[in-house]
Length: 233
Length: 371
Ligand SMILES: Nc1ncnc2c1ncn2[C@@H]1O[C@H](COP(=O)(O)OP(=O)(O)OP(=O)(O)O)[C@@H](O)[C@H]1O
Ligand SMILES: [Mg+2]
Image 1 (tube, rainbow over the protein chains, first blue to last red):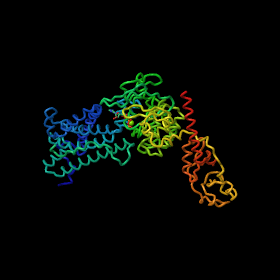
Image 2 (cartoon, each protein chain N blue to C red):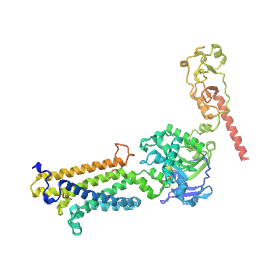
Image 3 (cartoon, rainbow over the protein chains, first blue to last red):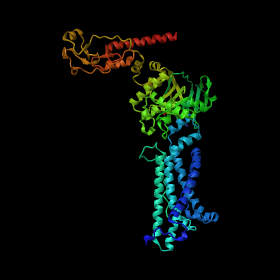
Image 4 (cartoon, rainbow over the protein chains, first blue to last red):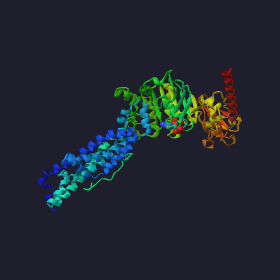
């Protein structure tokens, strides 16, 4: 291994090290954002219509069980060897983590609080936006952390479809040019990105919830799913 | 409320043909065992629950005719555990309804500050979050929040049942004081009969199945329970509790056995009582002593036995007087004025006489009403 060439990225990747990081973040975080935007209304529906939640949970669990490679194979026919093919499955995975997180968070709002809001003449929409969602923030943020970290690790799989794996592409390059330091770079940088993003989300959560007793965990943690790993997904 | 029935979707009859006239500017207490439909009744008043049958009139108008938001904002609602918005500061919690009614932020906050003072909360708590308050303080915030838009009606559902007895007593006294000052129409739900008797102008005792067992002022309830259920619900010592409604002003006080610390041997002998109450220079009680054990001329407080808890004639009831007499080793209750100075003592026998007198007066009143 030649650590002097740690940051010497082969030119066929068409990006500097920093460029790969930017690309990686974009491919990882945009899907989380999309997942969140879809999850909010979907979760609201599940809260409003209780009967909807079990089937939604069932479908999302099945989707979550589909390996990302299978997704890619199906999607490639439609979206080709592009970033989009990587990002769509990641958005689905985020959605799957976030819906239960939001639903559980919103449901964890105490009955008394809801009764008090209703008794004040606060309508259902206002109640959702001003009471239930804010109180669900800790649970939502916990879901976002899981989604973000797993998304960052999963982007690398994109290396298999036309080098769309950002930092993951370094793994392929390491093999091709027999430069193990590139593989190390890929692993360490991805891990560092995940840790930094996670820490930022924790800070954001603390900033958003000055009303939470410090040192206590959110009442309802989201349904924890194992963080998927490796190329088998 | 006119013959109001609530049948839930699953067939449970929570309230059964309940008719109740709630008086303006008074405290009406709904009391009864768990599941007897108290909460349901209360929630029908602000339409959080819609009655299946019957009508509820507010100032003569069917509440169904009012827009539900307007109706609810004219009624403050206080619940067990306060139900505060945990993500908002105390001032913002209290200012919620005024803000929704379109008050300026400044005006709403000023109102919140005023209310915090009224319910006995330190202004320093304003910027805190609910988790930083004790249960009793949270409950006060709940009351302040319900009063924020100055609604004429206050609905309270077991507001004080989650706090310890000492804090609860404080909150009850505070509520009575607030009611005195503001003259709200309060409907108060509890399963604690003592709380009902203490707070209620009128008490509605409910029984299983959502039926009304008796509706009467507390003194009347204690004096004449309508049936075995009510009698049972009132508990074993209702006779003693009824004494709370008899005034102590008419008790004959004697000052014979009351002596100062520097009482001489002659004074002690002249008192001629088996027990003497010794007071300090200002006339405050120190304790009871038997004449033969007292050091004439310079009685030491160490020689005295505790005098228990004195009562204030006119302010306290016969119950307090009797309690004072029972506590005292001498069998005499110690009467004091507002400043705590002894105004005299009264024997258990004399209190017993006063109780019999009060009963007689009560019967005479009833006869007058009946005729
Ligand atoms: N939403 C509901 N659906 C069906 N049944 C209900 C509902 N709410 C209450 N009940 C039933 O109605 C009855 C009266 O309930 P309610 O809550 O009014 O009692 P309560 O007197 O307030 O009791 P507690 O002292 O325990 O609070 C109970 O038997 C209860 O199980
Ligand atoms: Mg109840």
